[in-house]
Image (cartoon, rainbow, N blue to C red; front, side, top):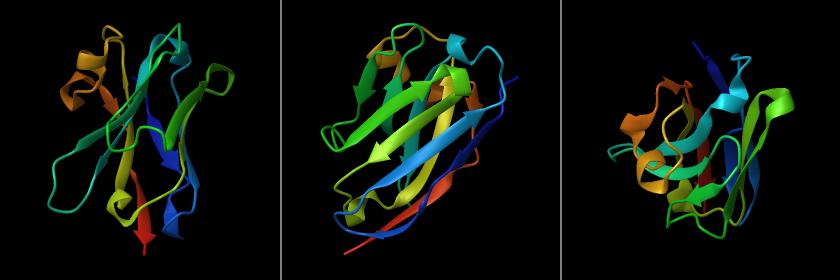
Length: 127
């Protein structure tokens, strides 16, 4: 059973950058497609980005496309989210998730697909 631990959140100004990390305990990390979701107070969980197993194909939500980058390092059992050109509306709790489901966008963009979740890390962007 994979355990996921996020880090790297914080409070920044609009236009700043952050890098979030998610470390997995699972030795077979490379078998999992990984994703980042976010949830702001009073709002539904939103798909941010995903990176598939094997080919490391990446997918992004429309609101972050061109500003955020997801990457993975299987040797470190880790996935990263680089957040650039941050906006106040990016303020949320960011959580990473893992799944062995089929690596297609319409599957990986759904929160219900994921078997394992981290506890989340807060990102706050002020104007």
